[in-house]
Amino acid sequence: MNQPGPDSATSPDTTSDSATEPRRRGLRVLWWVLGSIGALIVLAVVGILIWSQVGVMGAEAEPLAGVTANPAIEITDTDAGIVLSPAGESADVGLVYIPGAKVDPWAYAYKVSGLVEDGVTVVITKPWLNLAFFDVRPLSTFTGLAPDVDRWLVGGHSLGGVRACQLATDADGLALFGSYCSTDLSESGLPVISVSGSEDGLSTPQKIADARHLLPADAEMHEIEGASHSSFGDYGLQAGDNTPTISDEDMRDQLTELVGSFALAQG
Image 1: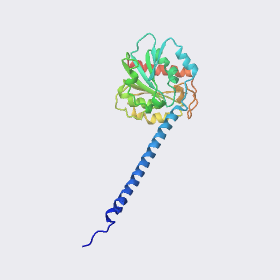
Image 2: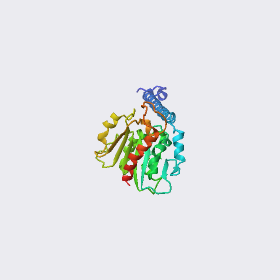
Image 3: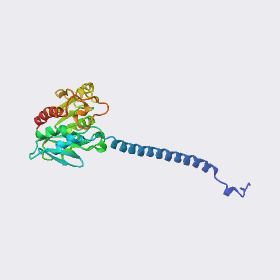
Image 4: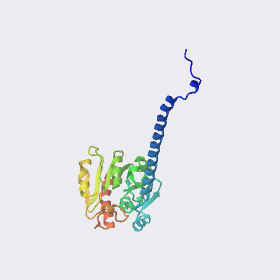
């Protein structure tokens, strides 16, 4: 009978080692891949945070000073938005106004001040990261800042208008300022007003026309002659825009006449 050799009990299990090593290498590769993905995500988030805070277009001092000194307007500044209310009276209708990308919300105060003087409460939102698409808060976050208002329009400028279209079914109407929808509201039945500019270099007249089919058939469409993209706020000329040929005062008056009549009709 053959007997096992004296070293057989202590011989290394080379088969087990050879099977374990590939698994270890696989785990090391997996952790390296996951770590790399995690690092890229962190870098992307940090990059977006930095980018969103750099190059924000600030409000021009003189138009804003005219609003803050106006005794007909009460201003309440909150973390979620700026509330502009008619002084000494309760408004029946309000407008939630969403700013364009990387534009200081205060830059819109002067251009909407005529609406407030006419009896419309305006809440200018403060989008997360200065970009409306990153702000997932519901419309009620902003309408809740003026709880006495019964009926609400939602609107916005540029990218803010695109976001307003996404919230429009929760409102009583939609107001677009140099903007257009990417959401199909053609069968919504919502009252809609779109105000654009003939000299807009970003939301161009052609882009407004191309997106017209996404709005209800009875939407009010108005083009202000001489208005550029940045004419809807007071933050200076925006890159890529055309030079406006309309004064700030005339622009404010035309916005007040057009949007004010539309808003009060919804009250």
